[in-house]
View 1 (cartoon, rainbow, N blue to C red):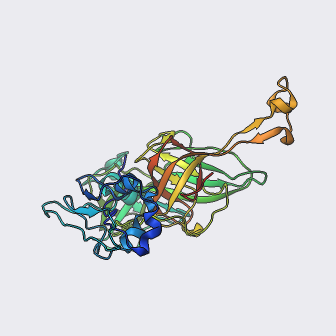
View 2 (tube, rainbow, N blue to C red):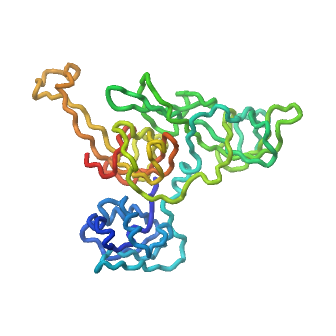
Length: 383
């Protein structure tokens, strides 16, 4: 679904400072590479480096690339290092716009229209729609409770609670995670269609990771709650999703995301079992390259935009039939009669939006699908 991060992969030319990175270069790479429309930094790095998330180290050692997010189609990037002397990037014709670090148009719904909050209690909400309608769209009026002090001309984002993410604390093994759909009141309801596919693992002990809100529309106040009227009148001003009773209002976020991403390994270790894929977008059960997934870790765990994880299928526990006999069923084997099998590598993910306890990531590359429940590790983890 998305094409990752882009451009100045190797603007590059390796100096003594990048000797360790030079050791990561793939064999038989060309001396130069011409940037093409649709390229991304990750793709170029993956083509020529054994570890594509190392591209910032190359860029930092090559000051002739002043801004890796201003590389244009037609630019020639050096992939050679001769006598420890850097070779400058040869600029091409500036007839096209520079390629952004991430193809923002493809992931904008996740960058701009989704946010995660700890609670929705106290948020103003739509209590009615003009002429008693069930839905409202651009140009139509909605009535909101809880905006008593709002002034005409103020704008708000109309958001809808969609998912409740929960961490399920397990004392015997790894944590489990739960994501449940929410109804128009922001309460759990299994009857509405999911925007995500998710993992359900019941547990007595749990921690709420956050409530996901999806922006439906934006609205402008036309009349406050005056003259005995108990609701504020707003006009929907965007050709976006329809609004219904129960949708919440929040201030419009003028800068909902950072358009620049520098891939890097996690800044601090995370306990095994805590960092997992907890949901996959668009009702899929698995995520492949360019798909968006939700993760069970966020800013409190040291995760920020650009953090790269490797995803792993958690290894099975197999009964040792050779030792204990093929006639015995798995249910009758004790822990000493079972063998923990290795986790299996699936691919790499890069975080592009972070909240306190939850983050959204893009599947950058994979050798097998990444599924809900997969473990997240350092991008260089060997097992």
